[in-house]
Image (cartoon, rainbow, N blue to C red; front, side):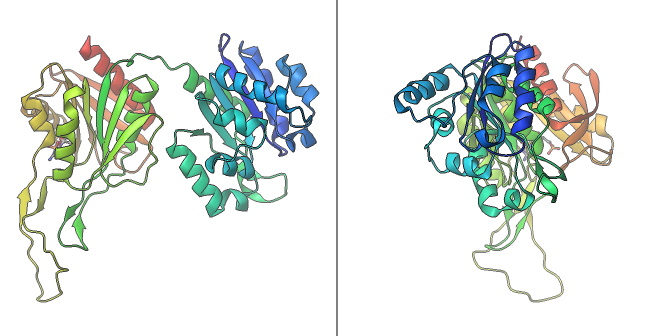
Length: 397
Ligand code: C5P
C-alpha cells in the first residue's frame, strides 16, 4: 500500500497514454494520492476527464493557457511529490529533461522537484534506439533518474521491436520499490569497490579480468536506496552511476588502494566486491613495446592487498570481502576471512551456472567469521545486494 504517498504522474503524447489510465487506477487502489499532468499531445490521445475521474483530482494540462495558475501548480506539485513518474515518456520529453528545457507544466514540475523520478519510455523502436535518445537516457540515469525499460513486441505503428511501455503492473511494482524501501542505513556510510582493475604494461596494453562491476554497483544502488551515504570506488566499467551514489573512478589496484585509504575513515561498512589484480607488471614501459623475438617475458610484482590492509585496522567497521574460486571454494574463502580479518565473505564458484562476472544473477555462499555458512540460491544481483546489506546491518548491531 502507498498509504497517502503523493505520486505525480506525467503523461506524454503516445498511444501508451491509455495504459497510464490503468496505472492511475492501480495507484489509487493502493491508497496513493495521484496528481496527473498531461502534455498537450497527451490530451490528443486521452481526455483529462478520464484521468480526473480515475485520480479524483484536478488534472493539470497545457490545454488552457493560464500562466499564473500553472506557475503555482507546478511548484506545489513539485514540492508535494514523493515521486514523479512519467509514463509514457516520449523521446521529446526525455530530450527536454536531459537538456534543461522546461517549457510546459510537466517539464517545469520535474525540473522544480527534488522528488524521486521514474521514467517509462514508449516510442517507435528506431526512435528508442536513436543515438541521441540513448545519450539523453544515459545522461538522465547518471543524474539519478530511474528508468523502467520498454518491452519488445508489436508496436502501435506496426513495427516489431523495443519500445512498448512497461506494463502498469511493472511500473507500480517499481514505484513501490523506490518509495517503500526501508531507510535502515540512514546515517551510515558504506564504501563499495567494484569492477576490474587495469594494470598497464605500456601506454597501449594492460592486464585486466572479466569483471563488469555489476555486483558492486547493485550493492551501491541498494545501500543508497536504503538511506546510506555511499562511496563507490570503481575500476573501468560502463555501468551508469546509481542514484545518490558518489563515484570515484580508478584504473589500477594501486589507484584503488590510494582512493580507498582516503575514503575508509568515515565508512561504517566496507564491501570489497572489486576484482583487484593480484599482480602488476613490475615495470611499465613508457613507450609501446615493439614486436621482436618469439617470446616476451613480463615480470609481475605483487599489488597491495587492499582488503588485508583494511583488516589490519578494522576497528568497528564491518568488513566484507568477495571470493571467486574455481576450486575448494569453502576452504579458500574461510582462509581469506581469517587472513584478511573479515566479518564475512561472499564466495562464488565461477563454474556454477548463474554465478560469475557479467550476468545479472549470482549463486553464492556467505561464510561468516564464526565459520557458519549460508547457501544463497540463484538470485538477481540486486536481490543478493539486499541480503549482503541485511547481514552487514546485523553485524553492526
Ligand atoms: O585473495 P583474493 O584476491 O581472492 O580476495 C578477494 C577479496 O580481496 C575481494 O574482496 C577483493 O576485492 C579483495 N582484494 C583486494 N586487494 C587485492 C586483491 C583482492 O582488496 N589486491
